[in-house]
Length: 319
Length: 254
View 1 (cartoon, rainbow over the protein chains, first blue to last red):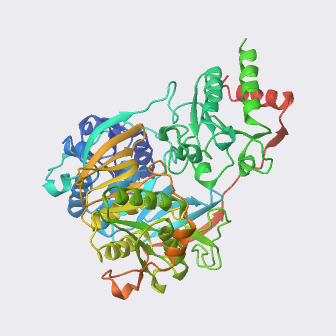
View 2: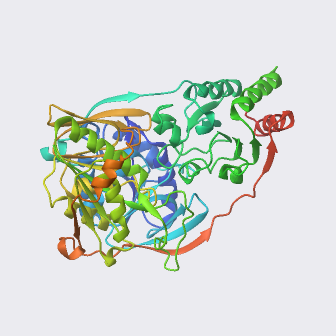
View 3: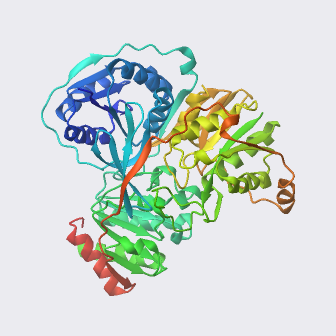
């Protein structure tokens, strides 16, 4: 039977957390679940992949996949696909995976669906459009494997306690696919917990009026504790904060216990990145801002005065 | 250095999008514009070409009205354009779009191909990679900073989940650029006047060697997402601040 494959993306030698969500989901599709892990860290990732339901993992620890973005991976995947004929290949939505999937599509001529939030069957994917207000189900046609990029946190990751068989991959990457080279990696980690992992995310937008006012959000985050500061695309594009702050379709997808949107109007681009949050507090001057439609609690007023008062109130409760 | 930029005409991003009875986005009778995400690519192309000398060519696929997106790029300073228009391309998927753009890009010599990172309406974010593969080019996508070293090497800061990577590739190459790469200039009156005189090649699918353009995805159902009803909205004041703190306490995060 044709298998469902999961692209087990490695970042700095570690498995991207969405991969385990996809392996977990793939168990529901009635096909064998297999994974492909290419690059440094691949061998170490096998145990976790097996634990979440992969029966076989195609593995190579070759550094070529780390040094040269996308092309070696797409080339090697295309070779494996020609040999093993999976019917569906799931990718986590990351920068690297978008490139691998995009290049692979040109090789296989298969369909490629982005931004999937559900995978009801081996030839079906769901996505949310118009800022999440409409869910569409799409039938995937054309040659196998269907390629689907799935958004983070669309499914839970649940171990089943299995082990995976390891299949070592023969790597043969021609020189012309080594032309693009990753020279250096830079991490811009903000202090405190990571955006994707914090229990509270406080994001700022244009309503903060000035880059310096992000300090108010940092203060609030400090008062709460397990909180991270994010931003809308508008202020990232304006250069107020680094890109690693961006929450939204082209940024990070977060699903914290509480999301606090400060001076953010609620453009589709942004909403997509935070609508899975369990509770939403919105602070905005404009009572008609779309963000209020998905807020559990909306505060209409000037963010620059509300945020410090909320910080004070929290500190007071903490004593 | 000659730079070819791929741009898209999209329905006005501020408007309310709708699906038609065929489950395709309604584009007819909807006001549109050059995709704001593509303006960054046009600006980056202009800056690179201006720095070392060279021309900027704009390539687009879309209905007749997409000409206005090309004219906008012209008004910013781009030199020549190609518009691929064909009724059979309505609802084209990303692979077909990439094949059409690749064929259109190949019609003229180039050193660098630029795109935005994703369209405002389709948002697949994979076209640049597919296009690079079809054109057999090395690529550096999601560039927040872009430059050419010694006239021979593309060097970008590529966004990552944690920060950025520095990626280099020899020209010819392809890059997709984010909003951080360049601040789009406003067209001058002179630019707008000159835009009307600049040459645009209009081609149909038959002029390009693309093959099958039939879509491989079809929407089988569409329904309103279950939305939680709007919550409490309060004018800011002591009571509202206290409610916000209560909510944080209920969520057990303070």
